[in-house]
Length: 186
Image (cartoon, rainbow, N blue to C red):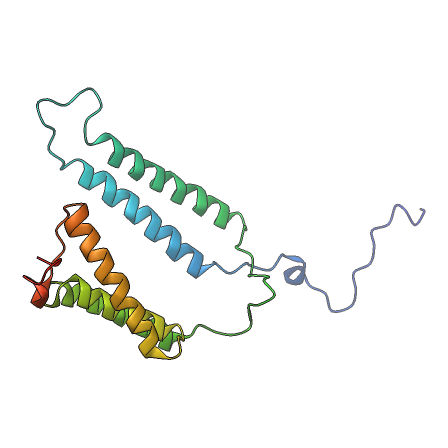
């Protein structure tokens, strides 16, 4: 019997368990994104059914676009799930200016969330120019703008211009809050 006919000897201490491939961990973060994507798609499909169709509607009614978007979201979520279960993973950012070993800056995330929440709560009582200025100024501050007052000043000018353009030029209502009645805001 030649050496080609004999099975190779296993190293000492090896077992059948070590020959099995290692079990891969599920990408929890990526699966959350997939679940949210699927949820948004299902929501769009369900809510599209509640859209009233006027009698004057053509063959393609107002439900067509939401149905298409919902279907694309669900199909994308399914394709993403299949890719994730097959082992495809998102690559870590390889940019030269990104510290991939650093964690998330949760303080900045909290500041940004607070700025957006403040806009939602304050837009009716304070009006668009003031509430949006606070949101933009808060966002710039959360992202490290220095000095903070310059970012707030730019936000005030920008949101005043946006408000005047929307209300006076485009005819779109934006709440003015306490500025109601002031020239250009009413």
